[in-house]
Image (cartoon, rainbow, N blue to C red; front, top):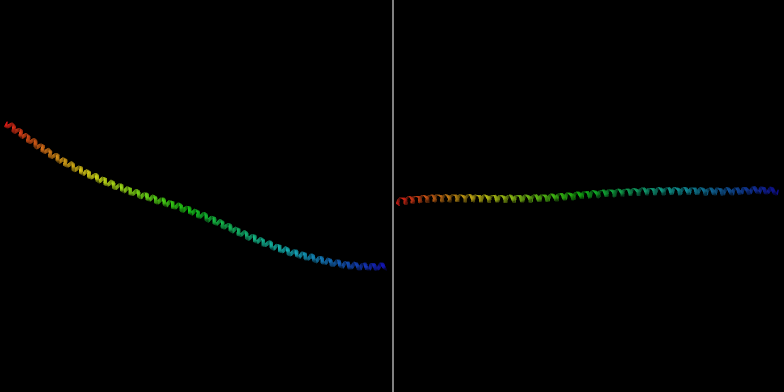
Length: 169
């Protein structure tokens, strides 16, 4: 009977070991379930953090793109302003050149007017000289005519004296 008790004890021991093993197994399964749940929570938190990081990346990329668009727009506006400044400068130069050309034209017109006036004065002076010359010529012609008449009268007088002399003898 000793052997039988030993067997009964053995099966009671085996039952107690099985119960302990089952409890340890159950506890290990519980820890494994807790670890799996904890891992799932960590995975969810990591997924949320990844989504938040991705959202921040998307927002940062959007902000970078907006800043780049702003820079491009600013550069385009700067270029347009530079082109307008160049056009304004060219317009100012053209206006200055037109003003100078108008001033030169005004000076040329004034010079032409002065030359025309000088020419008119010279023509008037020449007309006066010509008139004076005609008057002088007329006086000379009149004086010559007077001299010719005086000479003719003197010749006539000389002929009369000669005729008288010839008669008187």
